[in-house]
Amino acid sequence: MSTVLLIAVIGLVLAAIYIYNRLVKDRNHVRSGWGDIDVQLTRRHDLVPQLVEAVKAYAAYEKATLTAVTELRMRSSAATRLADKAAIEDEMEQGLHRLIALAEDYPDLKASENFLELQKQLTEVEDYLQYARRFYNGAVRILNTRIESFPHLLIAGFFGFRQAEFFEAAGAEVRSAPRIGLN
Image (cartoon, rainbow, N blue to C red; front, side, top):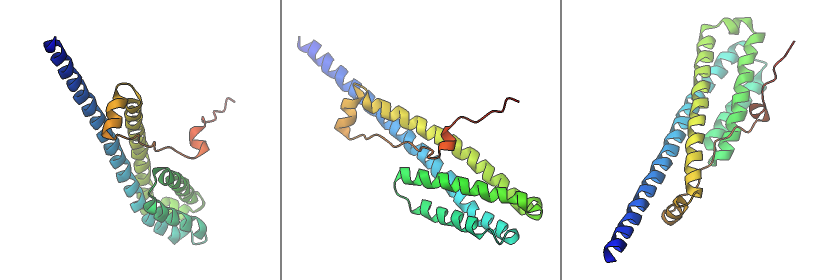
């Protein structure tokens, strides 16, 4: 009887170790995913002053757009809550799209090699950022599901694992399906 009890206890300890290690792995995936997002946000923030300067040279009267994008960059850097940062970054993305759209009104700007290179880099950053968001949110989903699932929730609660926040797009236009014309 004591051998069976010993085997059962060893089995439970091994199961707990396995579950704990899975939770650690999942938490590290979330951290890694956030690191990737942070790198892309930093790259985006580094492009903002260059874009503002490039546009400023051609579109001096578009000061409101230029100021808004610069202010959003500062607010995002100062944001501490993930939800706040996500909302500010959505605003920044929209502001950067408006900034890029200004090129249509200024043929010289549109033809500027410097502006075209910055536009290309921004597009690349936005693509990487979308990928990083998908990876991060997938890692958060996995971690949160494990934390809420039995028997993981027992180990997670005991060792203080907490659910992670999703990095969600706040803009309704991002969530809505694109309209397709059927003419």
